[in-house]
Amino acid sequence: MKSTLLNLCVLCSQNLDQLLKKMQKIVERTTDNDVLETCAKTLEILCTEGTAIFTRCDVARSTLIDTIVNRYKEAMDDWHSLVEGVSIIQSIDSRTRRQCCLSISFKRADIFSG
Image (cartoon, rainbow, N blue to C red):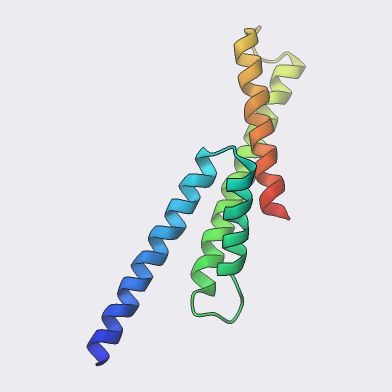
């Protein structure tokens, strides 16, 4: 019986790790508000204090938020460089990509900060 419970715990632990990794990849790759909000809400539920999985989920959530914030800062720095004229004259496509990156980074930061 103990062996079966241990195997079940290991299996659940592996599945939780896979879920958290997949959610991180989804958040990094998507720009859809509904998907981002669903991931944020799912992490909020998984990070309920007092549950057995709280610590692992909270670490994953914190890591994801740190990644989102760092990407937002990088996008802001890139944007400031463009606006201040520090970078070489950019093509319209490059400016559009920078605006898009900044917008997406802000959206992710906004959704996961609330």
